[in-house]
Image (cartoon, rainbow, N blue to C red; front, side, top):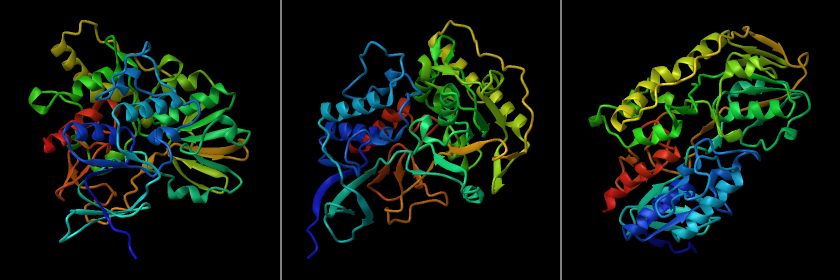
Length: 417
């Protein structure tokens, strides 16, 4: 006999920071709800980060409604376990109704029933009037199909599964990808005495501090503005196309007290060699695009082209007196390399920092585009009662980032007031 379905007004799927913020706002609105999470412990996807991981944004960005950061190191950068502990504390402080080890296997629409949606879970079915999907941006580790052409003698690890340098076979490491994870792991491996060949992606360089304030201070300030203010963060409608939602985050590090990452300086200092985009392989022969100069030029120009004028406009609004001070690129041009014999180079491991892809296969509803992302506007889908929070570029560059998460959540919650 099928188990009887529970009836709950609102179900939040996912108990990471996005799900917990939504829980707090739902409680404030007096809405009956539950937060479901497949994991056995709280802490969200932060639990999947490597051992020496540190938050890229300053500690003050972890402040959430009901628990602001008031520690002594507001401008520091939390380690993985401290960050996981922070969000566990947040769940306790707001008394979030979290049900762990509850895997949602199917979400569908119910006609003629009390609940608008039906959720099949590992603990039985639930009927709900509203569903908030808070799955976050880190769902399924993505390794491109071209990886299958590499020799099985070469170890391949995605950064999702990497924990420490000793996880990788002895020898040089080919690291593919230069987003925030890629550049931080390249530095970690180099500092551990491992030589790194770094395949450069289409990622931008930004300053850790600009005009006396951390990069994320500027992001938070801009996230509060709207087009009517004349300046905003880059918005989803500014992207060249839908695929750009998967673009890497700008290069920055929270290690060593936080610092700017400059690939040219990294290569000039030794221990890291730069190559172009990884194009494929034939066994142990790896091929790279002759685009290293182009990728480095893009990285160099990213801040000036996309963000600097926005930061300066915000500085004018707020009366920031510190002068513009973005560093100039180092005049170092590494050679283009289009082929590497991995065995001859004693490259024993490949570390993929190629990001993640959506994993919404459990949602049995026709709401997704060709990229597997829901069709939505500010998190609101075409199905009344079904919303999303924490998606990349849900509204702008700040979405799926701690500095704009509360803004996005409060806009969704305003629908219930």
